[in-house]
Length: 161
Image (tube, rainbow, N blue to C red; front, side, top):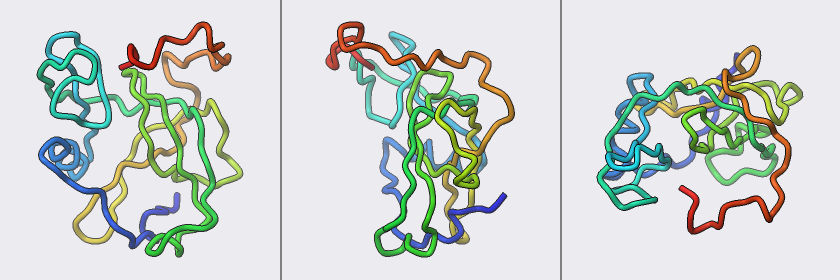
């Protein structure tokens, strides 16, 4: 499969004290996510404390198995990414219960909502590794029913984690 990120020379994500363990693990080819020490809820992106209960967080290895929730095909990219167009950026629902955004490294005509994905790691330049989604045969073990939830069934935003 083509590594679309090899054609991306644009700015890299900012690595700060909250996200450093995530990026260090990515460099090793491992997906680490935060888990709340109190409520045991997984969270992404990394934060200093639990977004739900404000308790301390720990890092835990994640499966990287996801279902494609949504995606867009980028045709007009900012400077540094123009050589990679067209490319897809997707929202994947990881089985751990968090939603992650990443480049979908697959032929554009093969990408479909509800598709099974696996996080993989693509090198950008000599010293940076970026998580990407790649198609996974079949569906994730706990693939979700993609029936839309009505507005009355949704939890209020302030209660989501």
